[in-house]
Image (cartoon, rainbow, N blue to C red):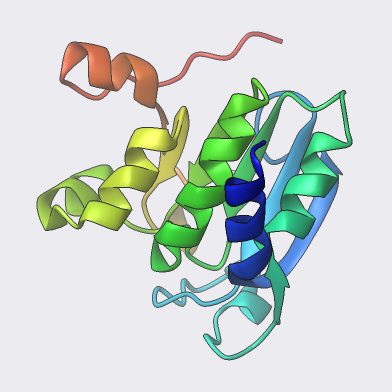
Length: 178
C-alpha cells in the first residue's frame, strides 16, 4: 500500500461494536468479521442488540483493522456486519478497497433489502454494494427464524451473489457447497 493510502487509513476512524478476527460462521471460509456500531432497524431478536446505539461501541483507525487483516494469510475474506454497515459506508469502502487488493472477498450484511439500497441511489451506499461480493439482505424477522439457514437468520433474508447479480442485471442467489 502506498504511503498516501496508509496515511488516509490511519486518519480515518470507524465506530465499531467489535471484531472477530478468525470467524468461520460469518461467511464462507476463514474470515475477519467487523461488527459496526449503530443500527436503525432494531430487529426483534437481534443477535447483536448492543450494536444498535449509534453513540455506543468504540472508534478505531481503519489502519488497525487493515493491519489485522493483512497479517493473517489464512483469511478468505472480510465480513462487514453490525449494526448496520450501510450507516458507515464511506469508511467500509475505504477499507474494503484495500482488502480487495489483498485478494480477499467482501461480504456485507444489511437490514435493508437490495432493492431499497439501489432505489436510494446514494453514492456511498452504492459504492459499498459495488464492492461487496456477497450481500445478505433484509431485516431479521423473529417469526421467520431458522437456525438451519446458511449465513442468515430468517427465511426472508437472501444471500446474494453480487458479482453474478451485476453481470446478469438480476438478483442471483449464492449457492454454497460443503
